[in-house]
Image (tube, rainbow, N blue to C red; front, side, top):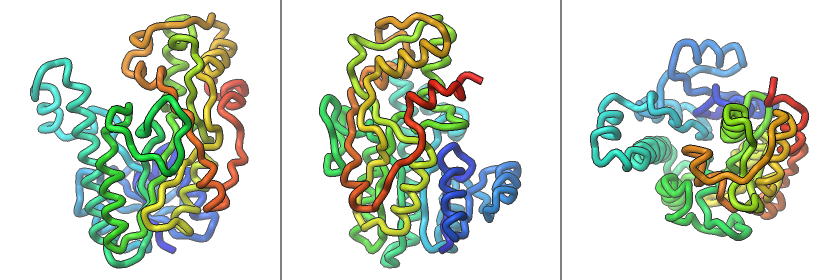
Length: 315
């Protein structure tokens, strides 16, 4: 099958691309720049020039495929338009800048999903979107049946999930894959790498309170395999959890980082972690049991702590 993949050059998307190609699929990768297009060609993909802000490019990419996997997301302030940047900075009080930025990037994501989904409506073709486990209620073990919590750290992504569910009722085989805050593996530049950089800069590996809050985790190659299974076998309106480890006590993550950096481990206030503070303190224990049973997904790659202890994050 021909798969239109957004985020094809990214940490997770590039792994999904190779997973799909190895399974016999043809992959059309969204490429924002000529450099990205050349990179995709070298990796065996068919480049499709466009971006998340260019909805026509997303529509044409979806139209020439048998389905879509959407992993792209705008994380950097520099990647939004000049008008949006000005609106974020000058659109209200300074303490609201972060919220306005999240609102802008969430709208880009939901608009992209809606644009591609409208092309696929009444076709029965798959559209797999990406969300996060941090969108769910905190403080208890959550499952695929749990609904997003508007007070959660990732609540800004709720509209994207809502649109996916709406599209499922319009003849699109939409599925949602929720990923943990720690998708780890070679090339990771996400939350874990940020935690390591904070510990290296400040000379201490921190945790909040007693550090007994939990983070779920998954290796990027296991996540890539799940996306392929969801594309091939996922049901319309289904939610899948890309969770290999349900909940690692945060103090264990901090301890593994401390050991590698040879720095002390100590409790710290949320502000110690900057923008990551509300994520670091989150108790996000998440089950992926139903996903494994329904899709036959069997995570088999290294654990989060093993990936930290094998030193690949510290080269």
